[in-house]
Length: 342
Ligand code: ASP
Image 1 (cartoon, rainbow, N blue to C red):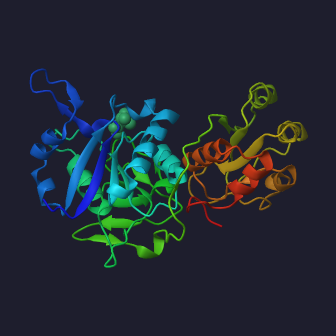
Image 2: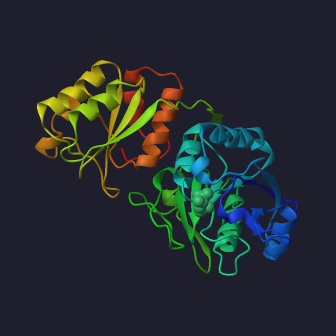
Image 3: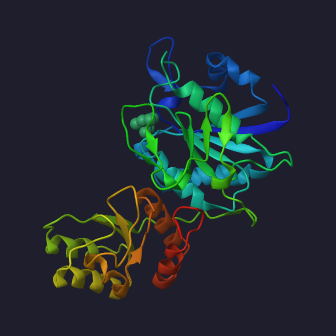
């Protein structure tokens, strides 16, 4: 194996890293040795791989803020020692972790590629081998001048590399589990690995790490005929500071003055409300219909084409920074690292 480039492979848990214990058959997290034995092609990659496993690997449904901070901390701590990072992660909440990392790792100059698989690495038909090998290849891909080809947080799954804050998991059965409805793929793996440089972030600043994340964020999905009492309770009975409102179509909400009054009252009390469509493809456009005309006036922020996962993580990041409600509203309206269109 070449001593040139170095990648840190971080195992957080999830299906991909499980191998059957030879004695009992129970699925357990792998060791680097076991991995190297199962995937001898790893020796052919033009990079050195170091493995770091979480002490207690978790199913991704158990991921919480401290896990994201542990991941961010690891990357921050080892930032100058590696050319890139691959994070093995359960697919269920991978999009949330990828989005969170994209905000925590500001002006990242190196690839952080999250990947996983639908079947464990030890299973004959597993998608794990290709996902892992190509994620590692992406993590050490460099231009002729030595700069990383993909200086951003990505999700690699089933031959496609997506921007980490533009994906969502949409399929529990197919190997093709992720989709990026509003932003092109960053790379596609076929006979060759094809990078789309026009879609990849061009970094200018220098790397900064933001560990602070707030848990004072909620999601309210609006349904026709929803109880106003319930809405008032959700918005006012907790000390939650920020809410993602999941609206209809291009950002439409009921025009009932009582409904809008409850939202207005929340904003007047300093809560931040962000409008994200229940439709995954396309964008919120305030004022396109009469049903969204009042929203700018009320102080509801348009999430445009952002996905729920990224909106959630962006609010956790902005509120975590200790910003005021007005600063969060302003900060949310601007793209930070390619998570929404201008
Ligand atoms: N439930 C698993 C997880 O998200 C599924 C997977 O690994 O893809 O951790």
